[in-house]
Image (cartoon, rainbow, N blue to C red):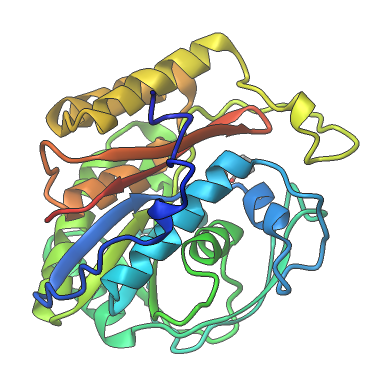
Length: 314
Ligand code: 2X7
Ligand code: FE2
């Protein structure tokens, strides 16, 4: 049975992942591909979000429930997330505000996401990531202005990974200046990933790193009257779907070296949101581990391809 569409056996045993927190070694304990369409948070009906839904996009949300259990078992000190919609035109910014609070609104889908957030930043690690990145030659800034609104992608991914919000966070921006000109941003994301790993090790943290990208990224310009009408949900076209499957096949068979070379091809073929670099950053932080990689679910959201995937070094 393909793991792509059948994320878990039906006996509920996936809810009880082994307790792996005994590995108290500092470092990165897991890397996750954690897509952020606002629809997924909307469909969960959390009290923090104003709009109400009837559900939808279940296979992706069930995979996130699996990740929530895994994260609880790992007991990390911090969740480090890179997401494409905190766009910074000059350099890579790190949120160093100790307690971000506010309302995050999805600008294209404000009827789906108006989410009241309140979380803690691991400021020491945030500053260490900025410093290591700067030392590695990247233009880097520490965001210290209280009250700056946190983007919806960061909030959606963090909510879906840890709806209890009881683990401190470090949030990184997407430097979309190189994004507009070429795929050279991916080279910078490799450097940012290595700097992130060094900062995690230097501060003695046990960290989960989450790259928050969709895959194929063409989407409808109309939505159904009921946004969660799953009869209307399907891939934008078969070409997009096929290229997503090629990428997922590399992930689920652990062919990470091939994946690294394939990501730019996939971007060219599908306008993939991986162009913002979150997936590359996350895998670079993990050191591009060969032989591991799981696809927990794939599903489309308003036509875009989205996968929840995991890399858990033993
Ligand atoms: O940010 C997104 C996305 N990546 C995919 C689909 C729809 C909305 O928002
Ligand atoms: Fe997005």
